[in-house]
Image (cartoon, rainbow, N blue to C red):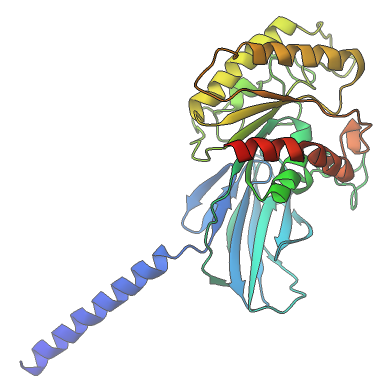
Length: 366
């Protein structure tokens, strides 16, 4: 073999090794995503729903993350950060161009694990994650039981975090912290993966201050990725929950702002919409089990009406042999201490603790 042929063989071998090496790198998972989100390209992912997250492992003690608040108009957002299994605070994602946010690493370890959770909700626009300066290492997804939490502002964690921004100041979403909502708290306790499909002010047949005239209700938005009227971007339902928790009724039963005319609560509409919504959930998650929750923000006669309606909904599925029986859970009475008569973080911890035994039992039966 002459020298020219040897050179060509070596060149082809080099290209082959590089290609194999590149395929190996591409196949290694360095990011773990969860929740309602959208991959924009290979380098950026939009966190959409409450507590949607991206996680990664990295070596060394240097890390900065690139984030941007994305909406039809410029405004800030919030993310919550968990480093090596410990909550390290909430970060304000400023409006405008993508910015780099340094992460303080206080403990020296060979490898760290960082998870970025969207603290605000889908109606606040998205948070675009555009990578990190950290030296990434491989991350492996661990198979866990899965829970989906469907609900309103309570499920979003609205008004629960008043540590830095007091109630009544800033923007209406400045006290949002989905990381400390009852669903994520409960899921961490049960070592389960979770998904939040929740919108503040939303109801099953009407909303907090709207009789389903101008605003969409949960059955209208649930199948849409952005939890709004945009049905051009459907949600893919790849997250197949073992258990679906539905907590809707607070806004249906509310009196609104007291200024706009409010019709009496229509039990028939509520029950009918709820039954059809459960069928929608089963259609997308045929192997799931469902639990219905009352509201910690409703008491007295209204709570009695809510319980009666939920019992009627469950009764409608008594002959359903395809799915396990639907469960009803009733919260203990609570006087919420967060903003706008919402639960604060400590209230959410209490709510999660109340749910834990029941949820664990249902998950163990799956």
